[in-house]
Length: 444
Length: 137
Ligand SMILES: Nc1ncnc2c1ncn2[C@@H]1O[C@H](COP(=O)(O)OP(=O)(O)OP(=O)(O)O)[C@@H](O)[C@H]1O
Ligand code: SF4
Ligand SMILES: [Mg+2]
Image (cartoon, rainbow over all chains, first blue to last red; front, side, top):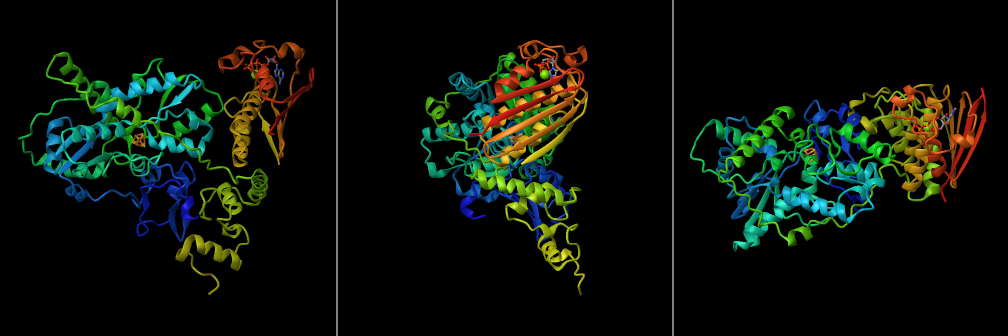
């Protein structure tokens, strides 16, 4: 495919040196985006939705998430760490939030900003959006970027159900930027860095759906930062300055599954885990489920605590965050100095939060032209009948059906099926294209 | 293009495979989502009726560039009074079927609403054949 045809870009990469082409990731991918070529896994940009299942499944750790060089922060005088609540949930409760933030400051950040600080503001925007679209019955939350991509490629008929507003991350980035600019700091001196729990968030920052600037200078992988902070915490140095708790209990719970839904009336659906989300969307698409109002969908188990770049078991991190929310509720109740300053969220930011368009990008459509697509579908059906139907993946495709599709699309050759024309020269050449030198020559 | 499926009596959990498979094909062809939905809803209702009220049967789907024709044929008790059956809310569904979440008497009216043509051939004690057409253009 020509580079101009690439409309999605991703941060999930394959390390060819470590990859053995074992097919594990290829079989697990929910959008059949992976093929084996030259004995290595290859991810198709247009089909990948950044869910991270391939990375989770890889037995050789050959799939990784490209991150920005940490030293990039040195390029800015004003270095902001945009920290999601899930990051605090990675640490044992004996470590205080302020100690963790103190470590981030020691690592070079000048400001810490908690992402979920923007949640309350955003909930109002979502509610307003829903009220302004009475013709839509079900609203899909735009929070999980992997869900947006999944809907675009697998459920194009549901793209209009996605709330076309940006996420807490975008709101937070804009809010802190405005705050700093208002303090008279030059734009060039401000570098905002987001600590990400997943590949999907990176893609949404680097290659946003709407191609609008996200104001984020770089992304730091959560596991990487966790290791750095964990090391400093154990060498305990307790001159940490207290920070004002700015998050409400509801803010802290937001990234967890059901945490977002709790902010909306009518006990909305909250679905977590990739397979569950797929099943739910399948039913929603066929009107087999009635879901009025907001639906919260997260591809990771238990929500963002299950993100691929987290370091803790999702249930353990969840429990810690729930405890933190309880603590905040108590502090709030005791009238301690909890100041919720929301002055940085303005009408102006609200206007910038609109996503102008989310395009359907059907993964299935064989051709723009019905007649051509029809012929291809017919041929595919014929080829599928010829194939053994055992989904062995030796052809470098995840299933016999996927190979049939690759063949009609011109991306594969029927001879790459090891059951067809066994031992012929054409078949050996085709198999070699898929497996490279893994194949020992029989003819010599 | 022709597709054939079989329907098993009483198997509610597997019902819907035919409509899922047809849905996939229609997506490959780039059929307009509104027409896909109409097709899937009608086929699913007919499939469920053959599971719930009859003893299983077969589904034949023909797709060409102008229309989708779906024939759902069952060996079952037949429908004694079609006019009655077509009424919204009329149902003879057993308690067991109602427990599964069906039996609101909305299936046939829904099929009628979602298709461009509906033909019902039914014979008491022999079976029922539904021929449903969805026009694509
Ligand atoms: N294939 C069939 N064989 C025998 N009787 C049928 C068949 N399909 C429908 N009927 C009869 O027609 C009635 C109405 O069917 P319809 O699909 O409208 O409602 P339902 O199946 O009872 O409930 P729902 O479809 O809302 O779950 C059924 O209760 C049944 O008596
Ligand atoms: S659920 Fe959260 S962590 Fe997982 S992909 Fe979606 S946004 Fe990322
Ligand atoms: Mg029915």
